[in-house]
Image (cartoon, rainbow, N blue to C red; front, side):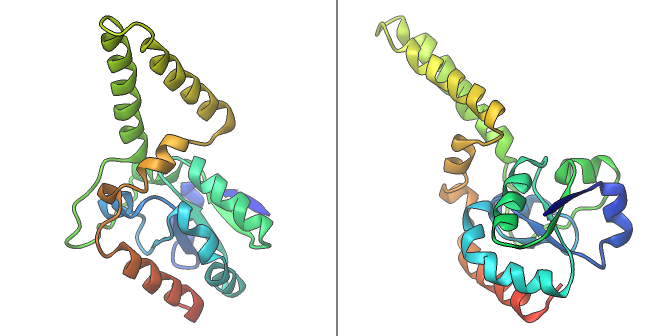
Length: 191
C-alpha cells in the first residue's frame, strides 16, 4: 500500500524515515534530500529484499524529481508486499518548500531527467521537420516522437527517460559500487 506524504509532513519526520530516491545516480549526485538513499528505478527489482528489510524496521518514503518515477516505484514495491510513503511533488516540491539538498562529493551534477527528455524530444522533432525538406517522409519521426510524448503523459511512464537513464552520462563510474553499499546499508539497518 502507498500513502501520500507532503514535503511539509516529510520535514519533521525526516530523521524517522528511510528515504529512497529512485532517480538516476547522476540526478541524485546533483542534489537530494538529506539522508536519502539512491536506488535507481531501473535497479529497483534487485533492491526489493534490502528495501523489504528496511521497511520491516521503519517506514520508507520514496521520492524522485516530481513524483512519477516514485509512484511507479511505490507500485512495484506494493506488488512485492512492501509498504511505502510517496513524497508528493518529489525533490522539486522539497526545494520549492525551502528544503536543503545534499550533493555527492566529487560528482558532477547532471541535468534532471525531464530536462534531458525535453532536449532529446525537441531535437528529434526539429530534425524531423528540417530534414523532411530534403528527404520527404522524415517528418513522421517528429510525429512518432509526439505520439510517444502523448503516450508518456497518458500512461505516466517515460520510455525515453528510462533509456536516457542508462546512458554513461547518467551513470557515474562508481554507481554500481554505490548501489551495492546502499543495499548493504538498507539490509543491515542503516538509515
